[in-house]
Image (cartoon, rainbow, N blue to C red):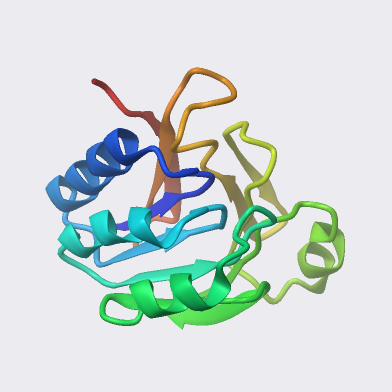
Length: 162
């Protein structure tokens, strides 16, 4: 299972709920698609039982601080982040403005993006496209994440409870 989150925007309570959920689900990896915002919020991800891979979002101004905070538990890079995990080709980005070239390439099993704060899962040819929504919940009032079963390539959006 892969946990997917984005747009956490320093909401420590929501980040803690996401960490608890991902640990309960036995995630082997958590992907953060940007907008952590401040390095202090990354410390909560240190409670995960798996590594974290992330990309910078448009609100992540303190890049060096975020890199340093994530180093013990994973990595953060400028988008796009392209890697293989459990036999899947994944691409992670924050902004959704440049999805089409990646989708039409047919190279990726999973394409993850964020920025809109609205959760979405759809299939485009062979690629599953996932936006986990906003973990922080500041814009919509709903804190959401996604989980992806890498064996069945089935994803679902989960609303985080209190």
